[in-house]
Length: 316
Image (cartoon, rainbow, N blue to C red):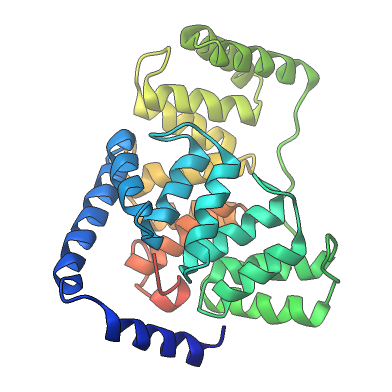
């Protein structure tokens, strides 16, 4: 749909709205803000209940956040296909972030059949509206091609320039090698996973501690989470930072994001948004969506960098 047609539809809709619509809008915005606040405070049950009520009325912002919560299993059961359904509903209404995330899910085959063609279709919609992460993903896909999309160096370079103009790392640059793992550490990690799934948090924490001491980044990340949440082990944010850092220094993207978050909010370490941006940027170099999203948010609100919403995206 072109921008002109979209604008015409918006105008037409405004002409037929009921008189009570204007009065309802502040209530909707208030509910969205309360839901976002609950999510920020990790009150996920409350956040999910508030977002779902609005999402089922067709609110695209709430649908996007329901997708996020459902994808992570926060406040609702984790269900990746259902999360994709929420993102799809929101994206079809033109919600930029949902279009970008839906593109990512198709690119990675998360909760939906992998398809670069579909990923590019949704990512272009978001990138054309200023979403740096979507442009970043387009550059990556056009570099290699595949899954219904032909490699196109010119397109890859085009979108790489857009992504970098929005404050993202160069998607065409060689990325850091992922952490290497030993067979022994992997075996201990799997035991920790088994105990975790059996809800034996203390046993899981002990297992993850064993392989973390072997220097395994995935175990270090998981042990950091146990310390951060106080699951099966005494809550200790300083120790959480220690283990997140150990994994992040091995280029583990989830650890880089978690460590960035600890710096952003001053949890277990002195608050430093500039350092948070640096860790998010390192994770973004690995095409990690969580870090790309967090980096965009920092630009959007001017945390640790000069506020520049053009480097993030117009809707969050």
